[in-house]
Length: 94
Image (cartoon, rainbow, N blue to C red; front, side, top):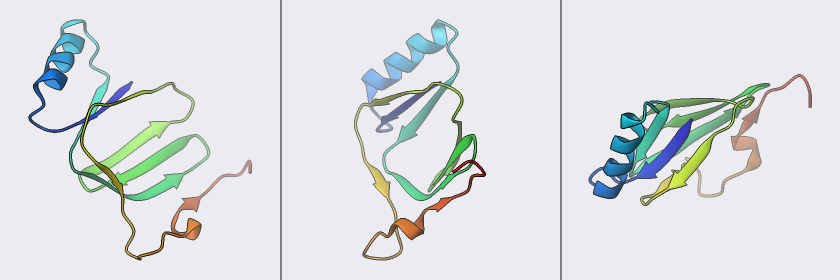
């Protein structure tokens, strides 16, 4: 899977996506600016990113590619100081 972060009207990113789709690579996720990460949840074999535009679930047993083209990825916290306790880790193997 390829995760691409860009802005909505970025034509070069659109061209890359067209090329990927032409070559039958439909396993692509595009995150358009602005993307806010509101919560991160790590479980045994998966990572859940709760975004302002939905939830992205990543299987930690698979390989991913991330291409930052442009835009912002904001880690959101409802407090001024981010504390590690804001993030929840659940696993039987730690």
